[in-house]
Structures are given as C-alpha cells and as structure tokens.
Length: 375
Image (tube, rainbow, N blue to C red; front, side):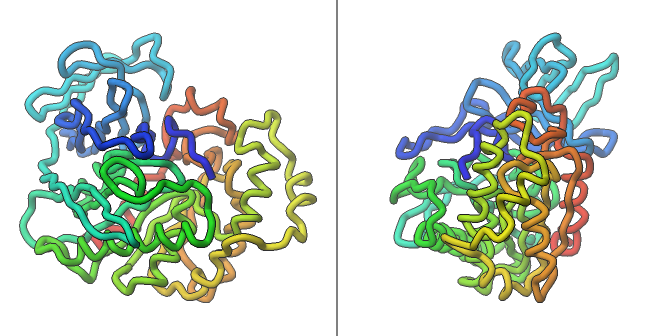
C-alpha cells in the first residue's frame, strides 16, 4: 500500500531511500506545547520549509508557511494557505497562536533526544529516542513505518503526541533509508514483512534495556502496512505488551490489493458503490501474505482505528476479521474519515488538501486507551 508522502499519518515528507539522514533546520522548534487552557499542540518538522501544526484535542491540522524567523502563518485548511486565518510564533520554547481574534499561548514540554544505532533483522538501523524529562521509569513505544521510505523524523507528529502522554518513543530510519543499511522494499511480500517485523522487535529491545523505561510497559504503534507488521512482530517478541494500529488491514495482501484496485486507492471519483465492492470481493480468495495466523495468536491489548471511508483498506471486511478473533481487540471506526483518518467524507485523495482536521476524537481515543499503560 503506497502512502502519499504528503498525507501519511505523520504527514511529514520522507527522506529518499538510500539518502543520508539530514536533520531539518527546524528541528529545534519541533515538539509538543502545553497550552494554558490545557490543550496540547504539536509542531512537527516537514521537508518543505515549514511545520505541521496539530491540535491534539480538536484534531485541527494545518501546514504552516514560514513568515520570518520563528514566525508562521496558516490558512483555512490543511494545504490551503490563503487567505491567512492564523499566525504562529515560536521563541525560546514559547508558542503563541493568534486566530479569530483570540490568542493562545503555550510552553514546550521538555524532552531529551538521543541518537541510537542498533542491529535489526540483518541490518544496522539508525534512529532517535525521544524521552520525557521526568523522573522514574516510563512506558515506551516504538513507531513502525507503513510502506513509505520514512526516516526517524517522519512520524514526529506522533512522537510529540506520545511523548506528551509520558512515553519514551523510538523512531528509526527504515531499512535502506537515511543512515540505516539494507534495501528499502515497498512490496508487502511475506519475506519483507517478516524482516520489517524483526526490525520492530529489535527496536523494542533497545527500549526495554533503557534505565528510564519500564520493560513491562513497552508497545508498538503504526499505520497502514504496519497492520501486517505489528502482529508479526508480536508473534516474534514477548516484549510487545500492547499495540495501536491505524488503518491496518486484517486480511491478506491479495484481498487488500483487490479492494484498493477497485477504488484506485481513493482516486476513483465517484467511488465504487457498496454493491460493486461486495460483488468483486465476495468469494475472493486469500492470497499473498495472510496475517490471520498472527492475529489469532495475539493476546495483548490492541487498539485498531479506522476511517469508515477508507479507500485503501476495506474497513467492513477488516473489522469482521478482527471481531472473529479469539481475543477481540478494541475497535474504533470514525465516520467521514479516510485512510489517513482525516475529515475526508468520501475518502478521496482529492479531498485531502482541504481537510481541516483528524477525525473528531482520534487523539483523545488513543490517549484514553493508553492511559493504563502510561500511568
């Protein structure tokens, strides 16, 4: 499942496969900011000279445009810059947001960042650990890539979100990307998914060995192709205590690809009707890698989140598969949202630039579900 680099769950442009990792000059501004009204805002670096602004309480999402040193503007929707609807300034760890005649202020939540290098499944992986600057042992999360050639900064939106919840977070350059060795392979073959699962399990070993991590509270989170990888990693490693999966398929690669072909991955407009989808998929055999054996062995708590209008993963089919498991996971389906869990009512790629927010309740649902592990 090829994700659009501009609109992946992290919504951060990826480093080209094979290119050396180069940190963004905006990385000093990247982080989670706690507002005086109690909200948390993330500023995540992008590769196009701006920052991604996300309010994790409301889900509001905007691509910021640089307007001077530490100053940015944003428009009425995610990629719609004009007319200017708000201004953001960041200076010395202080965030000011001016919009609609109101001003909100916040302070950056302190974290530490540490470069790490570790052995994956036959490769050397490079990444970073972002940790809260609070005493004691913390729960920890490794973020698993989807099919994209992402680097360690690719999911900084999620790094900011999870670190603000009190988690130590590890992200890494995918194999064959940035400073990680090996070869980047997008195709979801059984061999490739098994290797990527081995990389994820290796990331958990790094976290579990840290002095600031409670090794009994270590989990994996990821989206899209990670829905195949995370259960595979859980089958490999006893370190996986919990998992959060967004827009991940619980059916075989062949079944998923058959659905994506019908919808042209959200490019077919108007999209196919339910009758067309059911007619094509009814009786379609499982083929290619099939996650069902891994899913049936899962006993850890798992949260699956979907947009009902997903045009890459057929949500009714995947939900039915999940509901039939011996250990039933927690499932949340958000109406009027697509594969990227943004407010795209028809799930079409053409709707993405004018999206305003993540599905209402997306971040609070994750935070609430993770609370027992974070505390």
